[in-house]
Amino acid sequence: MKKRLVSLILVLAMTAALLAGCGGGGNTPSTTKSTAKVEDVELLAGSSTVQNVGIAVADVVTKNCATVRMAATGTNSTEANIVQMMQKSDRSHTFYMASAAPFLSAKYGVAAFKEYQPTADQRLVAAMMYGTNGFVTTNPDIKSVADLNGKKVAMFADQMPQQMAQAAFEILGIKAEIVTMTFSDQFTALGDGLVDACLYLGTGLPNGTPLVPVGPLQELVANKGGKVYAVTFPADLQNQAVEKAGFQDVWPYSPITVPVGSLSDTYKEEFDAYGSVTGMICAWADTDEELVYQVTKTICENYASLGDYMTELKQITPDLMLSMLYMAENEQDIHPGALRYYKEKGLWPDVWEKANKK
Image (cartoon, rainbow, N blue to C red; front, side, top):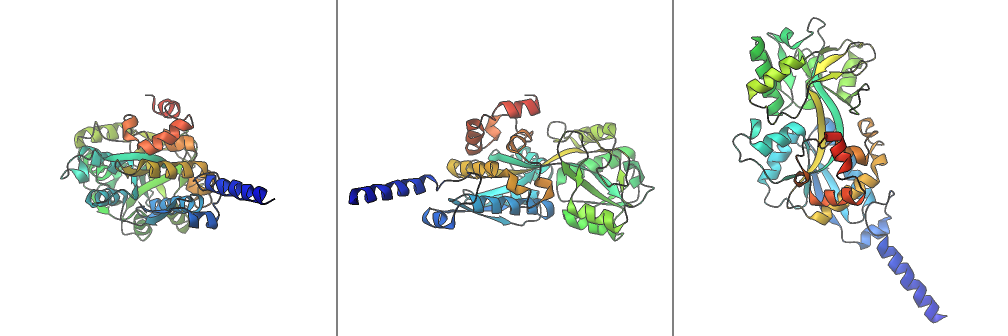
């Protein structure tokens, strides 16, 4: 009887050890977490919508991984996140959110990063959001970029989109003032009449169905009784502006026609916009491979929980987390820890190659 009891205790102990890993699609009991070695990690999460994504990711990781405790830190922008990473002496326990434009600006040393050496140490982990950038206004007489002559346009801090917009203004021979604001503040400023236009962002899936305006834009539309209008940015003008700005090899967006219903229920027109925008989780190359693997595994195996935090994350899946990393040139741009998980699940390379036509 005593031997049988000892054997039972050993079996239970081994079972508890096996269950102490990450992922698994459910919450890890607090008793398990307390006995495992826990790594404290930071996620630099930008502001507004990006910060909310970071908070969702950090909470899902912390609740579902016995070995990682993640905290989201709000910063000025995803551009600022990369600058902070550059300045850190130890980046081994920090992840950061980035969008495509600053990621590539830093990689090639252009726009806001032209005074820096090109950054070869960034690695992609997972894409978290697909969206489309354009311009919106509360003035029905402003219908295209050409109508912004003499107007104030609010844009967030990413320098590559700002420089591209400025190039478009110069091509058209107009004078428009770009005012840098946080993503949320620009909608407030437009609503208060402090600027004449600001950036649009709708999120969803890259399949031509209507996108969902981000929260601050939805609030603006509601406050204005639906009287918010799109400012179309013609594809030919965008292509000329990209060339004038010298971004032919690094501009991350392609012209896109935004479907009807993507701004509001009352706005029944398509409009041309910058193109796709992806919010991503990134890490530096020297971040521990096992740590990145566990974070990637936990996010992918608990992806359905992300939608409980934000409507913008309801449609995210592991396939999309990988396939939307379109700024990757090859597998070297993806962190080895994340790549290991994608390969284990049979997602790499097929899912990524199919989406990016590599």
